[in-house]
Length: 68
Image 1 (tube, rainbow, N blue to C red):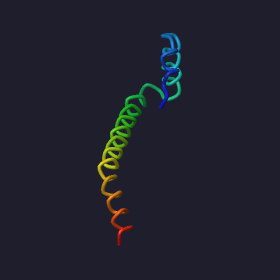
Image 2 (image 1 turned 45 degrees about the vertical axis):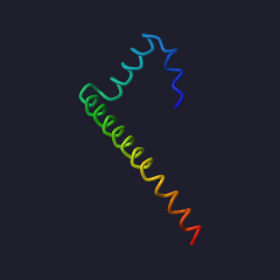
Image 3 (image 1 turned 30 degrees about the vertical axis):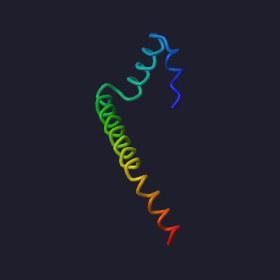
Image 4 (image 1 turned 45 degrees about the horizontal axis):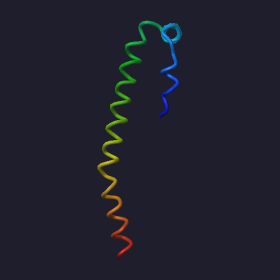
């Protein structure tokens, strides 16, 4: 992901973005939203790791299938 545009945000823009998020979701929903985002990221990273671990096995199976 290219997040270079984030470096151009100033403190005022960040505060405005946070205020809009607070207005959209409300103060009670923000902790729940943050937890769900954290869990989603954990699951995504776990899936990436499992996918990377199983990738060499898949390549071996396809080369063995070609030999047979």
